[in-house]
Length: 250
Length: 223
Ligand SMILES: Nc1ncnc2c1ncn2[C@@H]1O[C@H](COP(=O)(O)OP(=O)(O)OP(=O)(O)O)[C@@H](O)[C@H]1O
Ligand SMILES: [Mg+2]
Image (cartoon, rainbow over all chains, first blue to last red; front, side):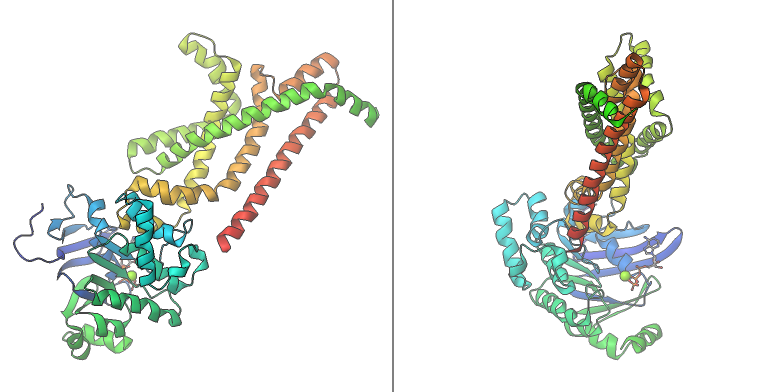
C-alpha cells in the first residue's frame, strides 16, 4: 500500500487511471509521472477529461480503476487517509470557491487552525505573509464579495498555500476572469513556479504553458495523446490531433 | 351589539386571554426551538450517504408530514400512556408532539438549505484536508442557516397557528381559553373574534420580522 514500487521519487504517479460517469468512460487509462518541482500544464479540448483527471489526483473524483500514488502512497487504497494526503495538495478552482461567510484572513487561516491546530495568532501571521506575497495585504479583513475576480483568485491561492502543500493543482484558474485580471493571477503562479513548487495546471493560457511549464500534456478524449517539453510540443507536435488542436487555439 | 359593548367584554377577558397568549407563545417557541435541533439532525440525516440513517430520517419526515397534527397530539397524549402504562401530563404531551411535528418540517427546510449551497464549497473545504463533518460545521451549515432564516420564520408562524390544536388535550393556551369562556358566557362570536385578532397580530408581527430579515440577508448577499 505504501510502496513506491522502487520506481522513482515521483510526487504524483498515476497508473492506468480510468474514470466512468454513468457508464461513459471519460478517462481511458492515464499513466503519468510528475517529479518534484516540476510544473506540468495540461491542455486539450473541452470535455476531454482534463478537470476529471486533475480532480482524481486528490480524490474529489473517485477513479473507476487504476492507481494514483502521491509521494509513493496509493491513495486509491481504502486504507489511505485521504484527508491527510489532501493537506499536502493545494487546489485552486476556476470559480475560486472562497467561503463567502468568512473574511479573507479567516478563509486563509481556517485550514491551519482547524486541521493543523495552529494557534490563531501564528495562523494570522502566516496568513499576512501569504497575503503580501499575493499582493493583497490590505484586503485581510474584506469579505470575498468585496473583491474583484483576480483578487478572489489570489486569495484562493493564498488559502491553498496556507496548508504548506507540496503540490498545487490548478483547474483553469484564469478562465472565469476578465482579461485585464488574468495577468495578476498568472504572475502569482509564475513566482510560485520559480520558487520550486510542484504544480499541475489545467489551462487555456498557452503563453503561460510555453513560458513557465517544464512539460505539457495534451489530453484528448480521455487519453494523454502527447507529453513533451513545451517548446517541442508547441513548435513540433508529433500527433495530428495535437496539431489540429493547436492550430485552433494559437 | 355595539363595538363598545364588545370592547368592554374583551377588556374584561383580557387577563385570561393574556395568559392563553403567553402559553401559546411559550409552546410555539419551545416547539420550534426543539424542532430546530431535531430538524437539523433529521435534515442532515436525510442527506447522509449512510442508507440506514437516510431511511430513518425519511420515514420520520414522511410520517409526520403525511399525518394530521391532531392525530399526532392524541397519539402522544392518549396513545402513549397505553403503551408505557402511565399518564402523560398535557404540557409534556403538547411539547413532545409539537416539537416532533415541527422537526419534520424544519428538516425539509434544513435539507433544502444545505442543498442550496454550491457544491464548490464542499470541494474547496475538502481539498484543504478538512473532514466531511468539519466542512459541514464550519462551511456548509453556517451558510445554510443564514439562508433558512426566512422559511424558519414561516414555520414559526405555522406552528403558532397549529398550536391551537393542543386545546383538545385541555391545555389552556389561547384557543382553549376561548372555549372555556364561550361555554360559560354563550358569546362565542365575541370571544372567537377577539382571539382571531390576537393570532393575527402575532402572525403579522412575525412575518414583518421575517421580511425584514430577508431584506437584510439580501443586502448582505450583494455587498
Ligand atoms: N460529475 C459528472 N457527472 C457526469 N459527467 C461528468 C461529470 N463530470 C464530468 N463529466 C463529463 O466528463 C467529460 C469530461 O469532463 P471534464 O470536465 O473533465 O472535461 P474538461 O477537459 O475539463 O473540459 P473543459 O475544458 O470544458 O473544462 C465531459 O463529457 C463531462 O460532461
Ligand atoms: Mg474543465
